[in-house]
Image (cartoon, rainbow, N blue to C red; front, side, top):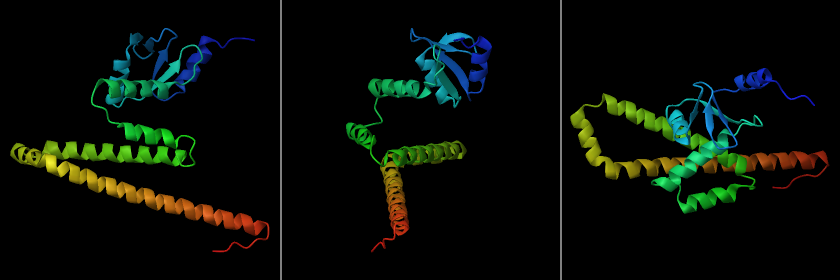
Length: 188
């Protein structure tokens, strides 16, 4: 069996979207764009700068970006003030294998994206705010922020409940259609 040529390997990698980083068995990361070894901290910095990054296993060519991102998150959670409480982590674990697993991933992704957009809007407004007004806002920051987050959390909870109701209604309709195929009449 012939092994793929270097040209074929490079063609496969060029089809990936983002800055290609190869991970070697010795756990070293090699940045193809700059032809140098980098650290996990460097990958984190690229992510912070919104640089699209793709990490591939140097031996197999497999995309291992998710595992590298999870490794960065783990290091951040251990090193500093964690974002995820034990309760949050336990609940995330409980969603694996649950029928809501796919929905939960999309739900978290949309909420984090909404939070990032909100943060971006706040940063833009802060840049346009006169310094004295910004100082007054910061003085209010402690009581204001929990209220904003509480409102956001309640809106998020309501959106989740609506989506769950829609999904239940869709399952009910599909069940009725399935039963009608076999001549059964579904009762309400």
